[in-house]
Length: 211
Image (cartoon, rainbow, N blue to C red; front, side, top):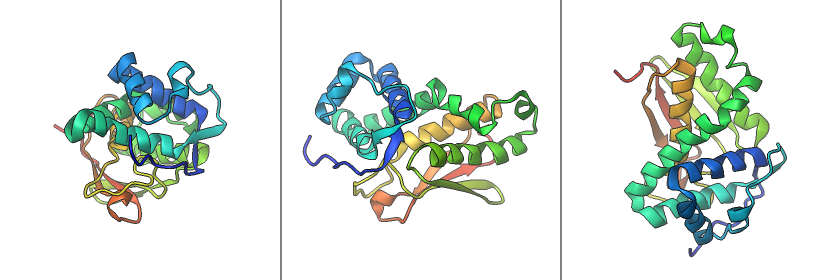
């Protein structure tokens, strides 16, 4: 693929990279993932996924090129759908393991009212990424929604676009909310994207679940 995003020198832990590639294989199949990794010149991961450790060695550019590669292979609509599904798989397959470290998988948390769960759970996810990776995230609470901001975003790193493209993050947040709430679905919209010229990637999360 032409014009691959160059290395950023910002990183996720190997464990997050491993979770992502395993989740992509779950969604795309082995042959689909191999085709994607060949296209974006990450052939080293075809036979060997990143090690299962917290060393920061999985470059943001890998995520950005995966995002671009999905659209290159499947088109804008197909790529968006796969990115959303992949994001949901990333959380359900592995990222929720980090929830225990943030205190959102304890029994005491599970019996809290929904509003309290959201108030605690959404910022907890932002802290996980900020603590374990070079992705910096924070959350603001509004009257009827939350604003989840990624100040340094890997999904669109080094890209320019006329539309928001961080669908993997939308999928991660959708699945996070489903897990935190005990199975409910919530609307998540990316309302600002660094790829379009915004200062940060911002996601609006409705407080009320989808009926």
